[in-house]
Length: 480
Ligand code: ADP
Ligand code: MG
Ligand code: ZN
Image (cartoon, rainbow, N blue to C red; front, side, top):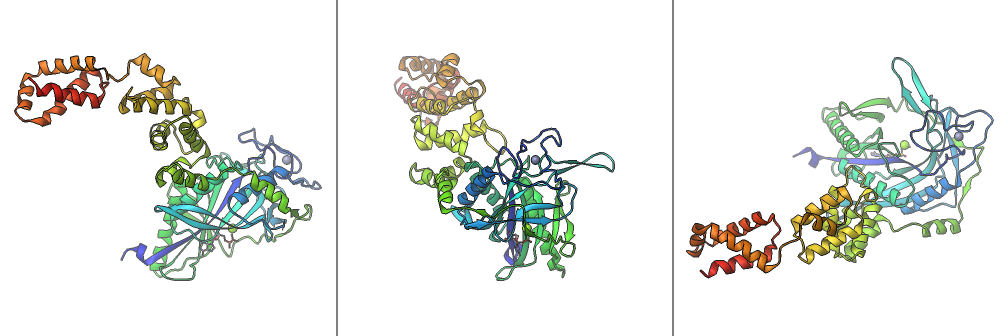
């Protein structure tokens, strides 16, 4: 029996997503990334005594969009709370967060599972402010940068519905896709706009109670999420099989060693002494406001995926790949709107266009080829003006230069030779040059047909229309 048959993994994720507002959650400092340290700060986000926070209305709007996009219920009132702890990146000595009355509850999202999907529950979505950043300088000193302090975040807590590291990565991928569609978060994991804590436990398969969990903090790439969780699963199983016990603790993933290391145990866990934030009134959201924000949401990835499959007839796989980002889905739809058949458009966009984009977040707006050019290219292939393989050359070239397909075909003389008289001449030349092969063919070695076709293709640089060429070669070889 393999371990996988004996043990079941249980995972719940806590994801922090940075909201795309221009200013911070409780002051009007800029949230721009990469500015000079401590340039975007004021008495509020630097934690001076005697100042008062003022809630940023756009941040509430964005958090609400995120919650609604995740199918959450919005209670009529939520409340901010102080989460008290000491750390040098937190000048106030507390973080303003939400605790017993969060902004939103009871949501869900669908992750890919085989040919269908699997639902993962979302326990809650709440708003909170980010802390600053410590920069560990050479030697013993550390520097504090408060530019990030007070940046608006939503924390999205999942139910313990996730069953493997791959599902966890899929969950974060899906979440990122929903948040970027809803335009509330830029999804940039490398810059920390999306960070993930994973709670991981294992239990004997068939057991109905959960095992003790460890929490792995602050992972900011899909690769690390999978690696860290897989390492943690193995560690826990080994520990239990060796007669040990998992202890509830916080662990950190070290990307250099590929291992998770204990950071603090339950005994050392913070007591945050939460209490309601006295400087902010309860946040009341009327049904009318909620309805208004709900109505302003765009078509979300799930709905779009279903529409691509049901209305455009795309295979599940295509629909999933094409809807991963809103930009890519828009690009694909524009190719279809410009006249291409959906499946042909899908093939070219998923193949050559995606190949032309690099990195984790495809940005089709950076492409030098507008969707219309892809549609034109598909039309040229369908009309037999160019072959499929020439089309690949054209698109590769076009993505570099930005030239329209017809221009490239013309400038490089890539038009397919469908003209019979030109093809006759080429075939005649090949036949004249290979009398031995002709004889063998006529004696019954019909497999040689491919040889003659190949020779003509060679002479024409692949531009002969293959269908017509086959017919002509067959014809010419028949009669002496
Ligand atoms: P905390 O308040 O310590 O953060 P929560 O009860 O809010 O704990 O849970 C945090 C996350 O841990 C949630 O995503 C939840 O689904 C997950 N979780 C809770 N228990 C387990 C468990 N036994 N195994 C794996 N994940 C768990
Ligand atoms: Mg937690
Ligand atoms: Zn400020």
